[in-house]
Image (cartoon, rainbow, N blue to C red):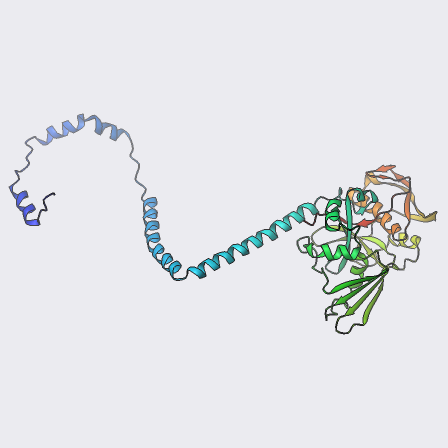
Amino acid sequence: MPKKWSEKEIETTFKHMPGVKDNRSAEEILERLKADERLQEIAEKKRKPISWIPVAVAIAAVFFISLLIPSVLKKISSQPEQATNFSFEQESKMMNEEAEIERAASFAEEAALSDGNNYAVLQETLDEYFVFQIGLVFNEQVIPTSFLIPIEKVNVDFPNGKPNSVQLYEKYASKIPEEALGFTPYHPYGGSFTVSGETITHHAINDSSYVNDPLYEGIIRETFKDFKQWHSTIEREEESITLIHLQDEKNAFYKYTSSTGQSYLVKETQDSLTVKDALLNMATPPHDEVEVLIPEYVHYDITVENKVAHVQFHEELDLRTMDREEAVMLIEGFMLTAAEFNMRVQFENISPSTFERYELFAPLPTPIGSNPIYFSFE
């Protein structure tokens, strides 16, 4: 075991040590230092100053951690159950938020896969997709929207056969992230639905506020097209407060542009008693919120023969001089308006004879929907 020295012993020992003397002259010591190669190398190199900032930061960090750890350990030991519950709650909340973000991103990604920015849904689409039609809302405008769902998905969800609009609404309406898509949230309506023949009855739950909404009728018309009548009742009263004849209104189509810059084809009610009236009304906007699909310099007449509405332009209309989206909207706006009367449309005095997916000198197909959005509803 090493000897422990006292201060007195150390002091006494130092006093008895022999003194250190150097008898060399100052000149001799200087010459020896100049001749030392190690000192010459140091002189040739500029020594970097030591940066004390990282060292100081490291010391401060260690000091802070040393103060923090006991406090954290004390808190954990005193409230283990509370801390665990908090952790689980936070994790659950984060997982839910991430799921919502992923869902909205997935929806936006699928919604972006439009059919080449076409606005009409054609019969050929049914080879791969099932059409779920619904009236969505942007501000005060009803947008007739067609969700295109893979047939395989619908067959799994409805193994007993083809669903009607009520079944589709009950299954999918709640899964539409309307706000993520830029729409005003309206769906799903509360209460329950019953079907009797060609009539739907909506049993609302003690709330008639939405029934009095001026957009209500337009939304219902665009969502339940395969029925003829719609009744709305209040559960506590069990009496009909609204009766809508779903198939008695025929409208012309116009262009609506949302504040986000997205364009849609929308219907507007006018005095369109015949298909000719409706097609001619397309040249006149009913109000400032929508635009016509026909350029100001374009004039045309309408004749109807054998369930085909012939659009005859006074001067040749060259679609190649128009913006691509405007040309598609013009063609499909005429098609959708004629389809309101179960008719087809054919153009005369137009070029080229073929434009994208359409043969313009022949009767064009009857659309089965508008404003398509591809979505799988997973």
